[in-house]
Image (cartoon, rainbow over all chains, first blue to last red; front, side):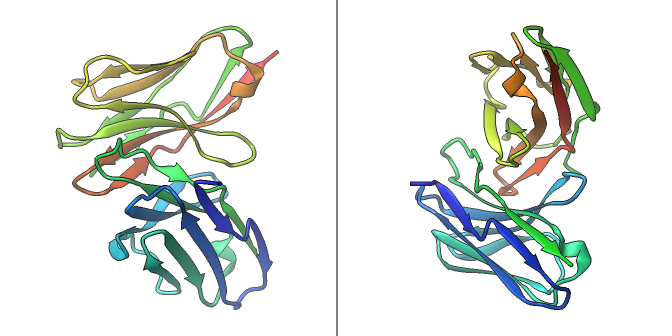
Length: 113
Length: 114
């Protein structure tokens, strides 16, 4: 009964490959996010969706393409992976007007070799 | 620009003692929320405490409390009776409803010495 779940938790892949990370939330929230945490542990927002609509795109390369089939799911597809894409990617959700607290998934550790 | 600054990259505290982590923020909006999150080595992001800007009273959650100084745009976290399990990275975050997103500080790594 995890609130925000993302898969896979660990992913090791070669440069140039394409990979996807899936995220689902069962909190009934209308907003979902993708955050990237780099090796220095800086946490930066990448995308935000509200009711399946893209709200925020923080100058992320076109190789990153989020998809939200419904408001409970937000997947992240990455094309042509580069070494610099190695990071922990966090999915999160929140509900506007209900404290605005962001609830995070456990993170997906991506290593590009 | 909307920023969140944590001026202490690292802090340490003796077990059972009290420690305060600093956070300052910058926003021109009147409606916003402030948070402290804890990130242990497992990397799970755990909400510690939340403060609504319109509330003057400082939020408290058990051993965790904040000192919210709205005019100074300061939001420090006080951890009382520190425990070994408090060792983690702590992030301060600012949420602005108009922007629909949270901005995080660079984090403070807290070490608890037995």
